[in-house]
Image (cartoon, rainbow, N blue to C red; front, side, top):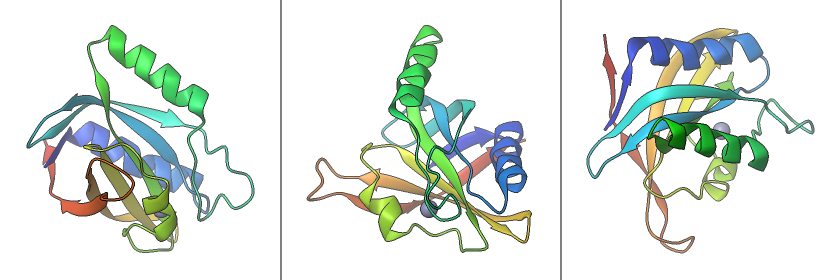
Length: 144
Ligand SMILES: [Zn+2]
């Protein structure tokens, strides 16, 4: 399960609307648990991929390092990542899967249909290596 506040849920969905028709992306900080990934902070990241920002996203290594550093100060770790799919379903693509390397982390995808945030789904990256990794559907619990 992925647990996050209504404000954080709204923020990551709004980010996708703002960057439409391009993808947005960001980092989720919080606590990784055996059953629950809890989001405590949401950090926007710049989409550094200029070749096709509408269907590819990329978080620069420097941004990841910065997020880890900022998080550590608050006792938080990276619990996941989010991005948007402009005019595409909220399902992971083969590229999303190939580029997912954070085991135990949540990968949140929001479909943005004609500029409006639609479905938001989360996928947990299970496994221990590139060979046995898999995405599994993860329940999203929004705390109001
Ligand atoms: Zn994607």
